[in-house]
Image 1 (cartoon, one colour):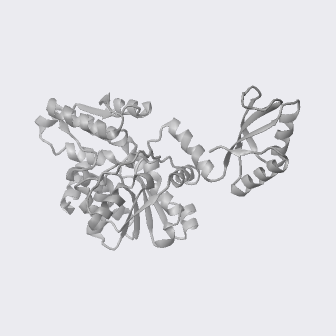
Image 2 (tube, helix red, strand yellow):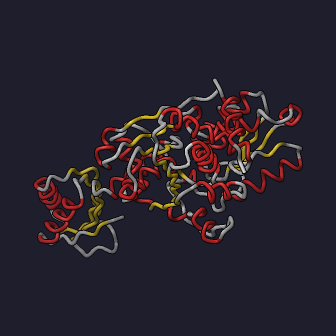
Image 3 (spheres, helix red, strand yellow):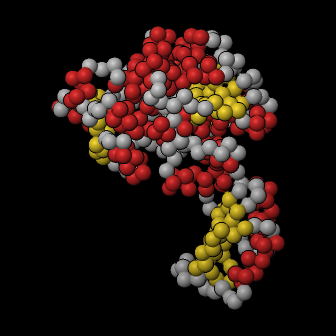
Length: 403
C-alpha cells in the first residue's frame, strides 16, 4: 500500500516545478447547494492537468541510464502532455503512442512539449499494447498512466495541498478513471484526516471502478460507449489503485453524459473556468442530487482543462440542449411566398431566437408543394420549449425535435 512517506517525498521532488493550484471558493455554488463549495483547480496546472505530478515523480526517481535510453507511453491526452513535459525537464527522450483519431490539438500539444508522437491503434488499449511492444524491442522505459506507486504518490500531492489550504475539509469529490488520481489523493487525505468523506465520480457509461468493487477485483469493462469524460474513460482500473480505492474511498457514484455536458457549460458561465469532461464530473454529481447527501466544506477536484475548441463547441451545444436552452426542429410547410416569414413571425412572438434556418423545397420525399425547414433555436428552458412546440402544433406545422 502507498505510504505517507512516499507522498511527502513526491511533494519534495515536485517543489518549485509544478503549480500549487488554487483552491477557489464559489459563492454561487455555495448558495445553490447550501454548503461551502470549493474548486481545486488542476485545470490551471502546467500542461492543463494534474498528470505532470505523477509523471515527474516517476521519472526523477529512475536510474539515469534508463532515462538516457528514453521513455514511452500510450495516451490520448493529459498523460501524454504530462509525461512529455516531465521528460523535457529531465532531458529525456519521450515517445507517445496515441490512438488514430486523436484530436489534432492534443497531438500538436504533446509535440510542443518535445515528444515524438506516433498514431497507432483504433483505441487506447491497442495503443498501450503497441507502446509496451516498443518498450521491449527498443529498450525504452514504459510509463504507466496510473498503475505505479510513484505515479500514484505524485498525484497524492494534491491531497497534501488540500489539507494545507482547507484544514476543515469535510467532503472531496474526485474523478475516477484508472484510479491513480483518487488512489493517491484519498490516501494522502485519509492518512492525515480519516473523517473526510472521499467520493469518486465516474461516467455511467464507462464505470469500471464500480464494476471492480462489485466483483472484488479489477475487471475489464466491455463497452463501446464514447464519453465526454474521455480522460477517465478507462475500461479497467489499475491493480495497484484498486486496493487503495477499496480502503480509502467512501463511495463511488456515476453521472450521465447530459449531466457532464451541463456541468462543463455551468463551470464556463458561473465559475468562469474551462474544464474538460473528466474534470467536471464532480460538479455534475453535485448538480444532480449527490449534494443532498453531504454537508460541510466540500471540494470538487477539477482534474483538467484540456478542452479543444471543436469538442468545446459540441459540448456547449449538448449542454444547452440538456438545459432546454437550445432546440433543433424539423417541420414541413407550404412552399409559397411569405410562408417562411410567417413562421419567423410566430417564433418572434414566442421570443425564440433563430440561430440558423435550412429551407429545402427539392427533397424527393416531400409532398408536392411543400418545403422542409430545419431550425436551430435559442430557448429559455424546458417550459419555453413546450410553449413553442404547442404553438407550432396548433398552427399545423407538426414539428419534430431533432436530438
